[in-house]
Amino acid sequence: MQNNLRVVTLDGPAGVGKTTLAKRVAQELSIAYLDTGAMFRIFGWKFGEAAPKMSEEELEAHIAQYSFTLSGIGFDSVLSVNGTPVGDEIRTEEVAALASTVAKLPVVRDALKRVQREISTQTSLVAEGRDMGSVVFPQAKFKFFLDATAEERGSRRFKQLQEMGKPANLDLIISQIKERDMQDRTRSVAPLVAADDAHIIDTTTLNIDGVFAAIMEHFAE
Ligand code: DC
Image 1 (cartoon, rainbow, N blue to C red):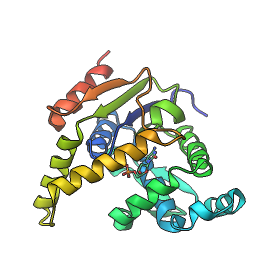
Image 2: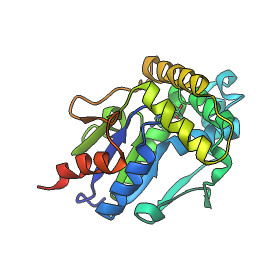
Image 3: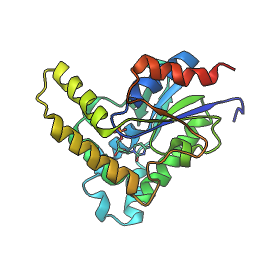
Image 4: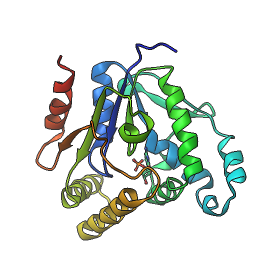
C-alpha cells in the first residue's frame, strides 16, 4: 500500500448535491471519484427484495459473487461490478428504495466497508456517501458534510425533473425526502451523521459554485 494516497470524504442526505460536487472536487484534485451509493444500489438491484429474509450466510454468499473496481479520475471515474461499468439501470426510485433496505443490513455494510477501504489502498479518492467520514474513513484528513433543508432539496429535485420533462409533484417529493432522511438518520447501523471533525457546509442558500469554493478553500494550504 502506498501511504501517500489520500481520501476525501463527502457525506450528506439525499438530494443535497453530493454527486455533482464530489465529481468536481475529484476532477480538481486529479483523483478518483467513488460513488458508494451505487454499491448499495447494485446490491439492492441484484438481491434487495430477498435480502431481509436471508440468513447471514446466504447474504454473504450473494455478496461474494460481486467484485467492485474503480478506474479513471475525476469525471472519467468508472465503477465496475465484475468488470462491467455500472450504468443507469440502478438510477430508479425502485432501486433507491431497495438500496435503502439493504443499507440497513450490517452484513452488507461490513462487506462494502471492506471493499471501500480496499479500493482506497489502490488509489486516492473522493468518497461520496452517508458514512464515509464517520465510519469507513475516520482517519481521512479532509471530511465534508453537506446539508440543506428538505424543502430546498425537494425544490431542486422538482426543477431537475421539470427540466427533464418528467411529471413532478413538489409536496410529494419533499415528503419522500423527509421520509428517506428519517430512515437514513435513525437507522441503528451507521446512521447518517456528520463526523465530529467534518466541515459542515449548509448549502441551502449556496449554488454549486459556492459550495465548490467553500470546499476547495480547505485545500488551499
Ligand atoms: O446516494 P444514493 O441515493 O445513491 O444512495 C442509495 C442508498 O444507499 C440510500 O438509501 C443511502 C444508502 N447509502 C448508505 O447507506 N451509505 C452510503 N455510504 C451510501 C449510500
